[in-house]
Length: 161
Ligand SMILES: C[S@@+](CC[C@H](N)C(=O)[O-])C[C@H]1O[C@@H](n2cnc3c(N)ncnc32)[C@H](O)[C@@H]1O
Image (cartoon, rainbow, N blue to C red; front, top):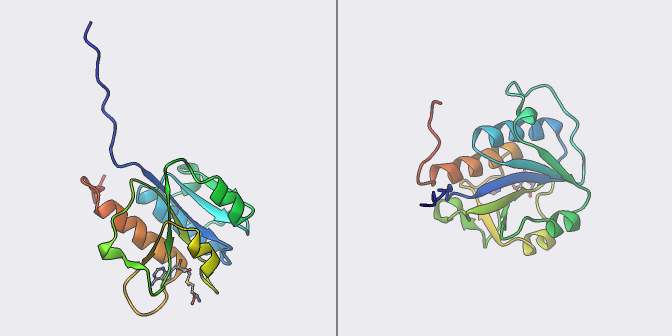
């Protein structure tokens, strides 16, 4: 009997999150963008997120939010064969237009007031920077990297469903 060979999507998956986020609104905005732009999950490290109402898409019903008490806990539980990609403005960062997104990636954003520390950056597989000489809002940064990832897929998401 002939066996049916199953076809799987080759694009992998990604998650995106923030360490020590200071503003609830930013997590809500990031959650919404992440869901719309194809993320599988979002996460917070350190400070917990309390649901706020500005997300009209109810992204919390679509993709989960995971919480990690510490960076060490998060790092230990990084999914198998998945790259940790930091978003930060640093001298050695790869500009996003030159960056090839790993098939399985978890993107990490820093807190609003102080960003990602050198110790945390050293734990990441890559560091990516966004264009412009000034720091962007954390949820905007997350939305841009999510957009960039999907735009580089062999089949980017359609503009209309
Ligand atoms: C508001 S920024 C932190 C700014 C902080 N005051 C500083 O100077 O480091 C919050 C986070 O957004 C992301 N971000 C903002 N602008 C970025 C850029 N141009 N490139 C990459 N990541 C950026 C980073 O993850 C950063 O830690």
